[in-house]
Length: 180
Image (tube, rainbow, N blue to C red):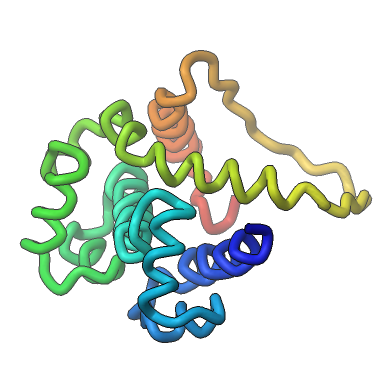
């Protein structure tokens, strides 16, 4: 089982870093060194969902963050940048997963139902992190730097509201994200 774990960890990492591009199942199979049919069966068994469902969920996750925190980006641009063929396809998928249209979510991001849909990915990440506990820690010294911090107190699923407050504070203080 360790062999599959390592192979599928590589597949998940590849998906994470290639969400902007077309994910080729044949390439994922080669990365895992498995035949197409065996890959699909083992991936679903290992992670509790098909590989394409995982990719779609990760794209919808990224899109939800863009909707909530990149309000200047058009919804159609978010749809296209996350691999959806049309605005309509994106809206249908988003509403199926989060029970809100992208427009409704942007107006009032409610992360509670989102977290329940994203739970399998959280379990997947936790499993990968727990399995890969050999981390090398490096101490790096650098000059004193001023930072801004906003403490979050409360349930983890409410973190999005704290982040939104921080973004509003940053905007009021004219601190663009690309420079600060």
